[in-house]
Amino acid sequence: MRPLSAIESLRARIETLEGRRPGRAVLPFGIAAIDAHLRGGGLARGAVHEIAGGGHAAIDAAAAALFAAGIAARAGGMVLWCLARPDLFAPALAEAGLGPDRVIYLEAGDDKTALACAEEGLRHGGLGAVVAEVARLSMTASRRLQIAAEGTGTLGLVLRRWRRQSEAVAFEPSAAETRWRVSVLASTPLPVPGVGRPRWLVALIRARAGETAEFELEACDDAGRLAVPAALADRPLAAAGGRRGAAG
Image (cartoon, rainbow, N blue to C red):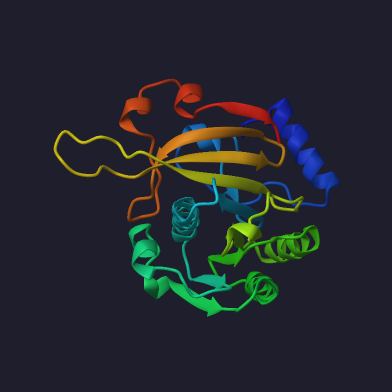
């Protein structure tokens, strides 16, 4: 067995001191530049991850929803999607790999109910992932979700969305393991008339025990997989992965 590096040993000790189980299962993105920024080489399954659009425009919010759908698709199993308003476009989620036969839609009506239902879903233990669409996420609510996710090993995703500009709020302190911000970029030009594969600027703006970074990526394919644009694929990992930020 490969001996642990100094960093890995320190992370394991911190997890033990924090009362968390070392060596948790993770869901890799399959892109080295991203996975290198995540503890364990991927998204922790028994944890909550927070996602939002990069701006206040609906197009960035839609990209964030598809980013979440791609992650949930790759998690496997059934997905509980709790939403406060019934405005999801199921065919778009299917194009990101999350077909309608794998999703249980729960129209909660408001944030409080959506969070309560998501918590119950995380405690169930038989789901591949649980998604909660809310405008706000308090520290108390995020801790409840995190504890529920840790108890069953279920992947939790909180998708921050707001109906009106006045509801838009910055990220508040929360217990989420990671935070992501997704913005739409111009698609890759094609040699023929038409629209190329959509591209996103995906910012990892918080990673517990990791570094922040930004990544230019091609949007999810029909299996929920992201890809590095061909123009960046041959560059060194640091360049392909974009810019590093301050420690999260």
